[in-house]
Length: 425
Image (cartoon, rainbow, N blue to C red; front, side, top):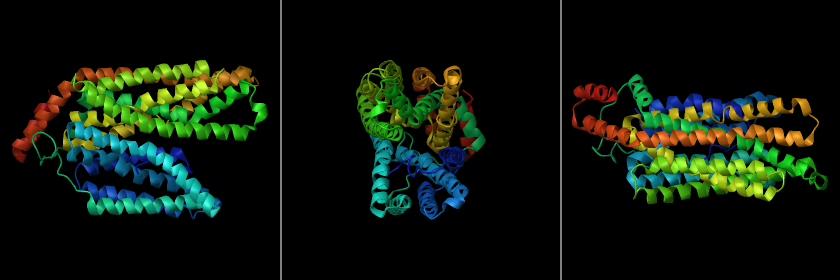
């Protein structure tokens, strides 16, 4: 089960940084070599590293942090390559459905990770066993992929059939930079990552401070209250992830009957709707924690609705021989502009607002809320990028289809010439 949050006991900063650095490398490899082998090796690698990290003692905490970085390298392999294999096995509505099933595994994996890790810890009486169970599942998954998952020819499901020629990495990057739909959808994806990263870090604390303001802190200790909020928020995130991807699939299939720009338009509407409900969180939290949770539930559902659709947009506007590179750099951009820095930025803004009234409980609550208000503005900006994607989507899709046909119909000698001609238009 793909899960970017698995084994989340280490240093997330190192994990995200290593994930970002490794993704473009695997994108390059995924466009040029056997994807199934790379995918399986990546899963085997992070499984072995995770298992090994469970035997590291506290005296060697730096080694544990290093292992988190190595896990990020392993996980970046399948995050960059898996969608491209699905893209070459299916097309149109079938591809959207299969990508949705794939991305459903992210929140499902998060939830199962918490359950499995907690169960292993309770059964063994040692949290290290949480890091010893999941690697066994990872190794099993890697073996199943290596033995039973087909390695489709690049472009086999697209119009024009199998793609034989490949351009250089520099040519690929120039083409992606000129692909307006790809650039806009990648920036929109970064907006989603920005909000989810900030929320995961700060919303539980914000809700705890809301309860303090409501005078409920007297009936429970700080640790119990904070732990409860984190657990509830985590459960909501898992459910909304599953629900959002499922609704996104249904909405896209329905809207495609009316417009060919359905994919980016559904994403844009969901982002703008999400911003409204996320704004309402900061309006109702002071008076009603239940109301805040309802707003979080609806806002996150709408936010996660575009996970699979964004990947499907990429499949439409990028030719098969560049898709792994495109997925990798979209992931790199999302982390770099999103969750790699958003928690720190929100914290800095909140601390700056608190300086004058550091001892005020009310101001601690309000300052964090004001800082988090940056998230809905970023989400609206992401919605605008999806609207821009809708403007360019049909042209970029047609260009990708023409380029794919030219590559498959002409010999290798003429391929580079044809590629340059299309990239320059």
